[in-house]
Image 1 (cartoon, one colour):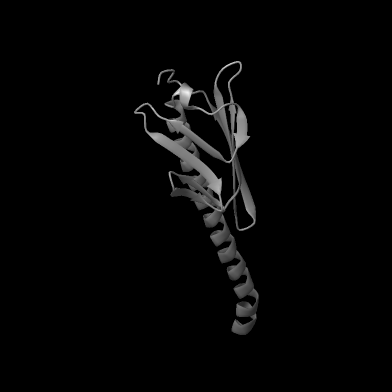
Image 2 (cartoon, rainbow, N blue to C red):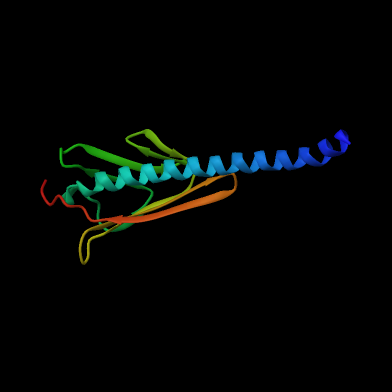
Length: 132
């Protein structure tokens, strides 16, 4: 009887544990992606309008913040970096789109994939710093 219970119960417990691990991995990737997105949006709000590149879509964005510090975000090699420091991994797609009409706008499109599950974040920000 114990062997029968173990034979039926073990696969159920293994499946539940694997499901838990998958959920934890997805939640971790989602929180890291959201944190990276919030940081980019916060810094882009302080970007000097003059330092933004001309309208285009690219995987790299360089601008100057309110303290006149140069900041470069890059989507490359499955990572999102800020001045060479990794902010997010498992990045499967990422672009920055800069528009100037009718108002300055920077859109960020970020997709992170973990355990076969994709998490896509889209957001836009209007820089508030017209000087420099």
